[in-house]
Length: 316
Image 1 (tube, rainbow, N blue to C red):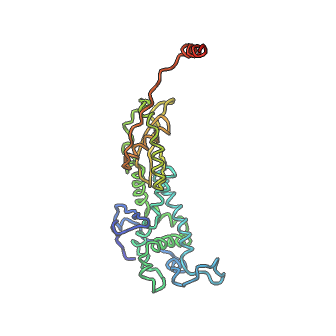
Image 2: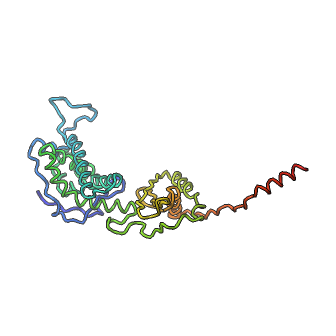
Image 3: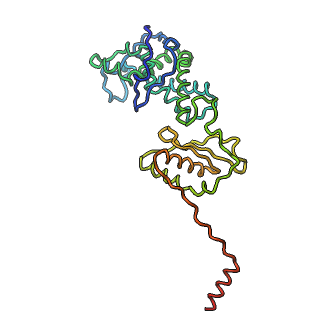
């Protein structure tokens, strides 16, 4: 099959404003496209639903007249691809948590990335469809991505899971690495895990200062502004091993809004750490926050003084 050059990142626009993962690799480095042995499966993999113009409102096809399009293969391929990529992520990064792993998988198997790979292999060139929609469908990102998933599903039915993994694992390895770096950046971490930690200079021996304790109103103000903007926030607590003591631990947190860190903080309690992160987030949002001053402390009244005062009032 003719070789296709991966398009440059600027030309691959994604749904929801995202872009396809573009690892720094040459097209020749990607594994060759496997060959589906079954002619029946191969033909159906490359058949768009517009080709037969079947009605879409049917609950199921007749036993003697199944639909000839690739939607069932695409549905199956989506599940197989997700499973293989999830396993690949865990093999490459065995200690990654589920949340970041899910974000990496979303980037790797998202339509923009799959569409760019589909175009690289030239899959849309062999797509059978209604002639009147040929130009539109061949250049549709969703159709390109669906066709790749249909090919995965067809290969799975034709040759089994081992054949699929032997192709997809080397194919998606650089994409997983690229996605890993992007998700680390979203979490305010360096792209590479062997770089210094995000908070290398924290002094865990210092207790929370009185000024720090007096400024606990930033968190509520921060939440209020986010609610007004219909924004949701994710609090990501970092590993604080080596910080603080067993009796006075130090909590480190990042405030994530739209998958972007807008503030970080630390404190002897989770709430105090979140408040510090909220204060930094307010500054980054352009909101000027004045420091809250602690109330004046009144000298304590002695019990003997209180008794004398009550006695004088009783004699009046």
